[in-house]
Length: 78
Image: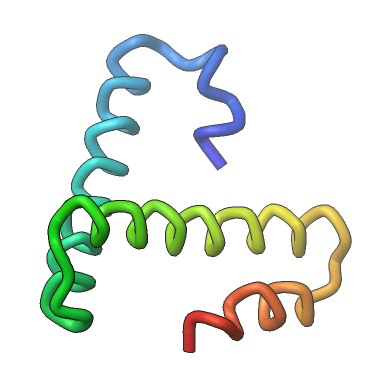
């Protein structure tokens, strides 16, 4: 994961990485606004929570080699 190595990446890669996550959050915000009929600030919070859950679960699975941890983490979002 590039984000874990951000401190050693070139500045232009860090900028591109941040832009990539901004696009993800922006898109997810629109999805949550449409699906849940909520205001943009609340939808953005949900987007950040959702993305954080996915990434955190992925790191946990890599660290423990227990795929069921991913399923447990994302279960609440289904």
